[in-house]
Length: 405
Image 1 (spheres, rainbow, N blue to C red):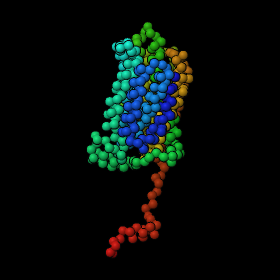
Image 2 (cartoon, rainbow, N blue to C red):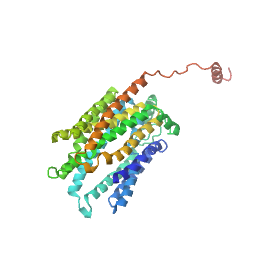
Image 3 (spheres, rainbow, N blue to C red):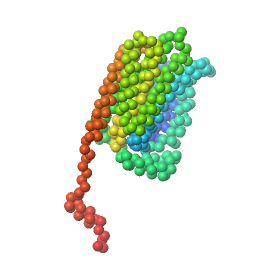
Image 4 (spheres, one colour):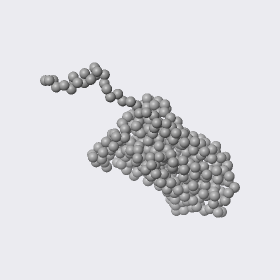
């Protein structure tokens, strides 16, 4: 229930928050949200009732809503097509690296801080997270550059800004504020439907990686220690880091996000099918859980692909990328309770069957996106009128003539 309480405001305010960044500087909005996130994370450490924890986790979800999509929005405003995948890839690996760090942090808190000053280890985790958050929020107010058209970042020199403006002007970027017209335009194109559906499937697939392995390990306390329960799942995150960086590098060099996305999806399908079978060796199960981390490649690939396909229109880009993460998380919050209930641990037969289905659909959607991009490339470019009406030419010439002619 705590997860649902946290995810509701996170999903509801994600799209409005991303849109708001076209009107309020991200260098103001994001650090303020981060600082508030840190305050309510700290209050979680001192909650004395479940109702208090519900309220605090709700506020944590609210102020964390724009963090991910806001960062994608900013990155997409500063880099050109051949540079996008690596930058989004570097950002995407922060998630599995963070999960790895939190796993080690949980182990350390359990072993060293549990009971210190009368506080349980889980309370110390909230305290540590908030302590890390406050300086990050302060740094964000200095380092977040907004967009090239609006930046006031003191870390950038004048010629840096001028260079960025010229680069992004060549790429077709324009400063706009999100409006209802922009939303209607986004809903009128195929990009919103296919990329949002692809991200929804990605979030469904990620459920196999979140708690399934951890709960399996916890089911055998005589075979796996508490540190092993926390640390072994981090191997999945390590594999996702390596595969994401490799896929991002390939995408920028080849300008082809389809191939690494397809390969990662195929590998994940194999992992899902192994776990559906279940009656395999422990080594095969570990292989499936570990190599299943390759699906996280799609976090950077899909965001890169969506950004590239909507790069010329800031309104459409903000709405599409915001919708992807918002709707994906919203549906995952609901389905996670149904398809991966803890009562079915450690096998999760229903969950693995569901994941095998969504993984197979992921392949279909990726192929569909590729086909739509091929179709768009074949469309003739709009013809631009190179001649003006005769009377317009006369008016322009009259305006340009010297008055003493």
